[in-house]
Image (cartoon, rainbow, N blue to C red; front, top):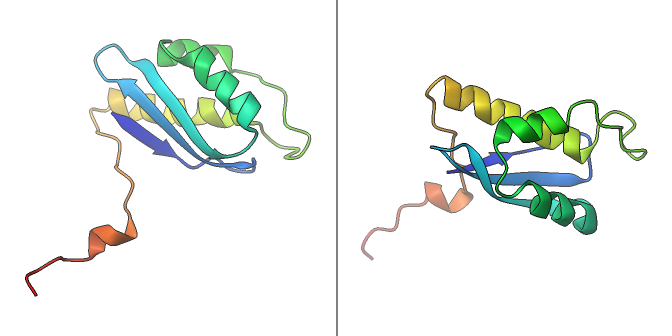
Length: 108
């Protein structure tokens, strides 16, 4: 299952978190925008980890000097908490909606 999260007040614009629903382990983490070296490093480190372990490890992270409020690891933690809460409530994370989804392709 892929969960799309829009981080706030950081350079990255979108986080795509792919998890195994049964084990709640992270299969993949991709992003758009942000620092590719740091976020690719984070992606490789968290792959295979349980979401609760990542949430715990990313608690109290230093803030990004550019943001002055938060950091990408803190925003990833926020996205994982949101995902965990939805899973605990039995909700399926919402799929992103793309503009083309609204077009109907009928016979011409």
